[in-house]
Image (cartoon, rainbow, N blue to C red; front, side, top):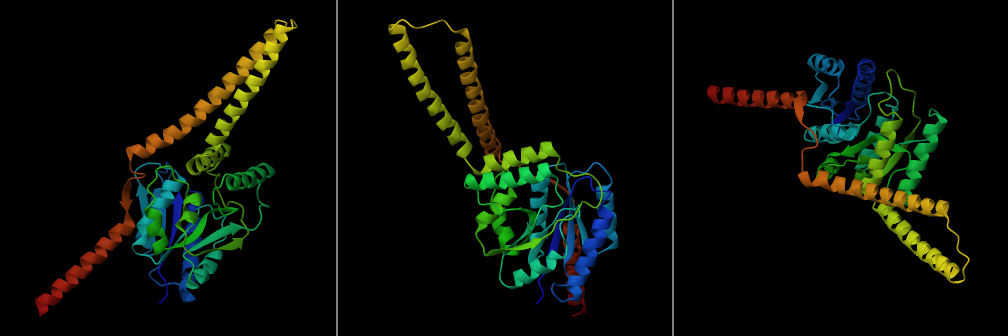
Length: 336
């Protein structure tokens, strides 16, 4: 039988691009159904991550008009990763496999067909990997490639040039749900699942409309979140730097003591103040980095929910189906 597919789309202030996104994804879904690659029960789930514009209005109206479109409205903005996770978990109960894709139409939707073919071959996770970065500006291209290389050097198992465009089977999403950390970095968590996986390569397009939701500040924050969530190497580097500074100071201390005994010392304010600033700076960096890790431990220890669902039209649909089934069963009993 054809698998039931749900396409999960996290959305934040996407009113400019969302009508076109819906048109493209609905056509893609219908083409896959027509080719008998997926079930006609397949659908699209759009997750509104606390948008401040008309994003939810567009989603809700479309869900009323098209039975293949559903919406999940979060009570507040929780960030892309948590919103994506909310959509995956909400979709898994009524799906055999789930594809996650951003709303900006930069990821090639035609690749979803390749995802399904790989899924039918027995792969639980299929990664969408960018073949090249010609559409990126030089700065973004350089920093993105540097990020992946640094993460690999730190021992984090990332798929190079892969973002969050992927297919996951139902059992893969069920395993993902078992990872309960609050500091989410799905690109690092998904490879840890360990199920059979493969990659499909594609060319990324220009954004159809609207502004990017990942400016430089968010990109730096996201990269730092990924590094500190998956590796203790930075804190070990600080330890190594502290040890190096300590032994260097011992060497210089021995040298200055020798100079004192042979009477060649001179009062040097510059060298003194420079060393104080150097050591003080290193200490502040170390304290700040340690504080970052302690802050993550603090967040994890509180065990607060990663998101709160306000409205779930997919859940409402399930309740209506269940209610209709119970009503039909009751009517059947009365006839008997």
